[in-house]
Length: 399
Ligand code: CTP
Image 1 (spheres, rainbow, N blue to C red):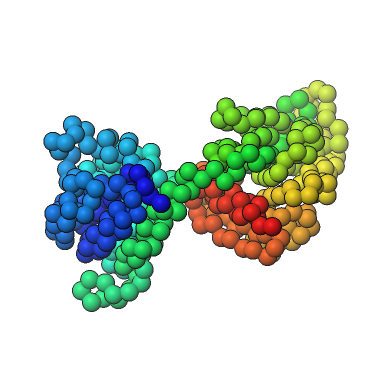
Image 2 (image 1 turned 120 degrees about the vertical axis):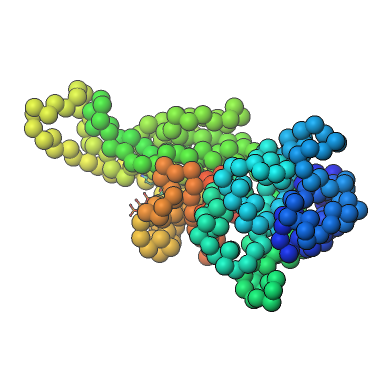
């Protein structure tokens, strides 16, 4: 399954370095080309000879290696995946801080390949706020993590911090590399909306909301990367990849109009846009002057695009809605899911720090009409997009 994949196996200096030997052997058995990169600390725990013998090429231990004049860029650029097992608090800290101190941290900064870190350390260190913050930051940038287990640690202590089982680590590597090449949405016609609508009051003022459109744009990019034919109806001025059919709109009415023809043929519709619920009944033709006193603006409801789409859906069409809540997240989202008659709802608590509107990160729960519940922890919006599309993909494969 890993035939021909180039995996950099970074080993840093913890007692769990001995388990990296087993990880290396399993990856090689699965067909991967494993390139061991050892930190100086790791070599106090395990000799390089072991990795020279078991890896696919002799271990790399420093920036000054006769095999290549610039080893870090060579290894980083050619890797299909960089795995760090065990990842010490030091390596996580350097990586989060963007500091290139040795060959491994240089490779981590020089790669665009997916990175999987497997932390291992004593419980006190694992629970330290600095380590938690670094890991949170790395996650938000799309770094994958296999959490440590609970059990016996060095020195006879018991607690959380033990390196995950090598079998679990290798299975995660396989999953990640399969996912990277997964074109599970090939040919699927997907329409996604993004951004907050702006409902004009007069030629210069509008009623709007804080939505940036980033989550919708991330869904469009991820779906296109997985082979879908994507139409993105957005209020945001952000660019999109050339293969995405981009439709820019401003108001709820324009968004509804843009979807009229486009939604009909879609296999999947994702309403990530924050559509205004109300708009001024009349738009003043000229700028309202404050000399005329405080204006009275009468509002009317906008059409509920999502509910209309669900009411007129084609057989087999999957409809996904979003719920931005500030309290009772699950209960409100479950009620919205039922009321709107859709298949999935992606709910986030927009009052939580770093979540939702205007941020690059999000944390959501995905509820299905079939009763399914999936929590997606705090991560970059592209990672959240991946999780949403995984659920959509699973739903599509159900008979
Ligand atoms: N939506 C829509 N058309 C509207 C309003 C919302 O299609 N006029 C869609 C959004 O794109 C999103 C979901 O409905 O997918 C969010 O619903 P929301 O407006 O938050 O729910 P409401 O029914 O208005 O409930 P509440 O205001 O009580 O939160």
